[in-house]
Image (cartoon, rainbow, N blue to C red; front, top):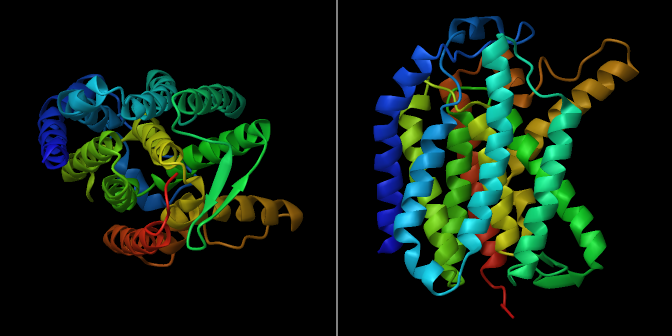
Length: 328
């Protein structure tokens, strides 16, 4: 029951916050600057308020604080650690968004600044999760129920790589109205189901709150979007996606539930690499991947539906892969 209430509270709070936050962002002139190299029809989105991720961050926080007290009283602070981890990533995104809005340009923090900040946060989160007993230096392989133990230092390097990669991959996915929101909703539903299966009520409340927050935000973010989540929201979401995977001690599952995020990232890497190697040739019409399909005639509705449906199927597959795990 707490889980259901957390979902409803977060959804309602996020929806209500939209009534206040969107006009506030308009008043601040916090409009999105559209890249010149992007699809030409995206120019119509110029000026749409960004940093709207604040809405589901606050909505999720409210639900977790109100409905998670029982777990906190029992000494289960996994939800707070994961939320805090995602929040710091979101703050990095907020700084990036603020620089863009303040100076009216599409580039905020430099790549190296983002990387160093994300690296520090990832290491801190890994240490906290381990010290609280939520994480061990082994890697669980779904379906075959095999666990591979590796040295702690190697695990920390692995964790930092996965966390930073996931965070930036979710950020890349946020390029079409509602896309990152829609794709992440089944991922949160997956974490909710696994948390309930394994008796992790603290993480179940967090996952449900996040799912509700995304639902409330989608009301405003669905095409045509009235607000964008900005890096504030997408980096927070990336932190939540990978943070929950590590808190549940199953980071390998990100390969399945994060298939769309991975495809978006690989499309950029392949496009840039091939462009440099061939001195100007391209594999995709435009990268990231969603722009390739847009240039091929896909509507934003179709992109949202297909990418979200693929993620939902992969999440179902992932659930089948981990449901037989025997917990220590």
